[in-house]
Image (tube, rainbow, N blue to C red; front, side, top):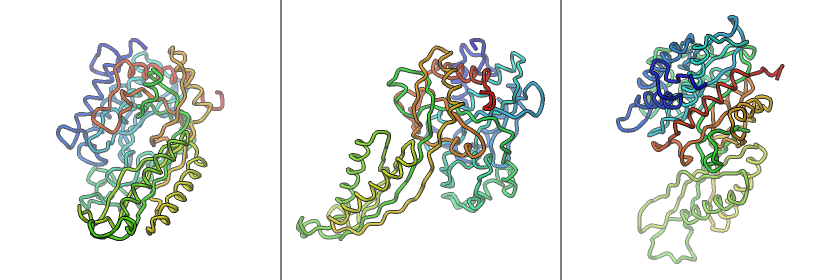
Length: 422
């Protein structure tokens, strides 16, 4: 793979540097000057799609936009019409994002196909690279839209969702040049896919701590999100004795501390309180109402559900002791997804063949594989990111690690065996 020119038409000093150059190019397509923000179906999203289409065609693929805005490239096998090994990731972003989350998987997959095409090498299966249009779910508050459309599980009721400017998804699709009444055309048949493999930055610090450039993902952790409201009694900060107070914010603070303590003592469980609000919100008024969110994740659904139930019981006990009214609502729940053992083994073999220890770790973040598992077996290859920082402008992958990920992915592709022969 030392000869792989990952930059396509732009020859680079190394494959890693070529990938970095394209990451930078895509990272400059943003609606916000000085930061990276690229929402689903925005004009910047369209510009990024056109850029990716061009790279796919340069790499020797037929490329097109599908009915939801996914960018789809196909490199035929040793005869036309064969089932495919599908590779890819997403090209939408969160607000003020890092530039590696999503695009690294797309650009690396394109680079691998470009190398096969340079060698005039065809395999006994096709390769498809897909840049999913919406994974983050920022604009319309519904995640995995691109991969759900491909998997045939897209919920058409979300077409009526509106963004913060009041624009419906239906209208945004039409403005993008797509027909919202034909989303179903993006769905693929199970027989068309052999497997789905996604290369992605780790978005955490584990590989860095292990001093490894790449790792094998075991599972994508499921997540439960709760909205918690505590209601007490507002009062004057100077006249209500401490023993007689029903301070909702103090109760919320105790609950938040309990979440952290509980998750610290349970290996494999993570819990986050990301939002907290208190009213009336005056310096000299005891808060009568507090609201906060909880996000709990684990690689096992049974583990997560048991932990969530226990955490709710503890919050209920705290609320009773403090004489606070409590409401807990589940706002989001995603199942855990296991990476297929037969496919995970091939990822590990490719890593070992490149001279690295095949270290296994779960993904705490969600990925398109959570939708793709409904239509095919999945696997993931993680690439180390500096400091474990993600969803932030400081998100970074060293060129050497990008090159290592590309070598592993190409080796996996070249030696890939479908499930019935693996």
